[in-house]
Image (cartoon, rainbow, N blue to C red; front, side, top):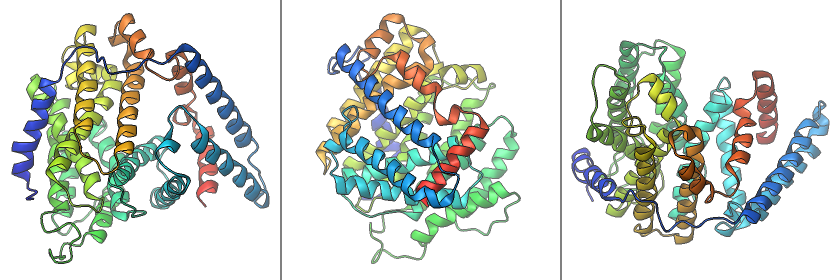
Amino acid sequence: MILDKRTIRENYLTLIKDEWLAAPDTFPDFLTPIQLNTKAQNEQYILTVSDGFQALIKSFPARIKDRENWKKKLEGMLENVLCEETIIGVHDVMDRQTLAAFQDELKDFLRHVRAFAPELSMEGIGQAVRNYTVYMMFAQIHQVKQGFSPACFGYSMLYPFTDNYIDSQNYSVSDKAEYNHIIRDKIIGEEVHPQSQHQLKTCELLGMIESEYPRELDSTVYPRGSDAKVYMLLLMMLEAQEESIRQQSKEEALTLSDRLDISIYKGGISVLIDRFFVNREITDADLTFYLGFGFFLQLADDLQDIKEDSVKGHQTILTLDTSCVQEEKIVNKLLHFVQQITESYPAENDSFKNFVLSNCFQLIYSSIIGSKEYFSTEYLERMEGLFPVSYQFLEKMNRNRIDNKDIKIQKRYMKILDEMIR
């Protein structure tokens, strides 16, 4: 198949928009509530595991020679959780060998993160890890075993480096334009002259993609054929980010259609690039699914940030009309939409695909908590009924997240992370 910008924008992104508009906005009837006694059991299990991990972390040895046994204990606890817990149930779709390989690849990724950007915060590391995990999930869907990808490392690290810069109010429009200009030059193969450490590292990350996908490779040796154009996709991603800056403008009022187009383009292309790094030829069905899945993830992200985006004047789909009735309709559509695109996708690993869909539902239920003031009490209660734990318990766990801790505690966790991946 021919993978080109015009086809993606005019055909596939239009198809995603039509599917979104056609998705019902009524409460989905295919979702299964969770019994209260099951929730209580889940909460008790999480508390028991959490207490065990906290006790072990507090006992982190000061002496280097004592750390090997400590590390083995922590690794044993992690393995037990992955192979026994019944809340997420990843062991139902991945055997022990696959889980071990999954963990090894993540450790490899984190080693590269710490070596490349030791200054990166826990929040920034989390951003990069989430993107790389999405790529690993796609490899599982296609039953591809390929190990650590330097190219996808570079791409995943671009998230904390570029998104946070573009979204920041500390930089002017001209600063952001200059930053995007140097990124564009690097993508198209022009000589670049970075003017800051941030620009330099951004170019180095793009260079990691180029190291795995040299420009001079011809179609006879290219693993995905001559129609697989990573640089075209990266330029489209840059264009999508530039278009998304319009959402931050207070001078231009964006219509619902404008906001949809921007979100579908940015979210869709960002995830299609993750799929590109999986060593399997991209099909028509892939394009429809992964572009749609990226749009879903973009809206799930916006769902958590309704208040912040509203205060800043950012024009997302969810800030157009912040009434409870309208926000609830959008969430309903989102659940219908992701269910439709996932169930209709002919995956090579169907059980893992269904596992991903289940976690997409959980993502929406949990994301609502970040914007609960925009939903009615009745709707929140219905959503809470679908979640494995109570919302009160979830909020308490969120307050205790590592990236919500003070700098001193975060540094301690970073030290422990370094020991774990050493």
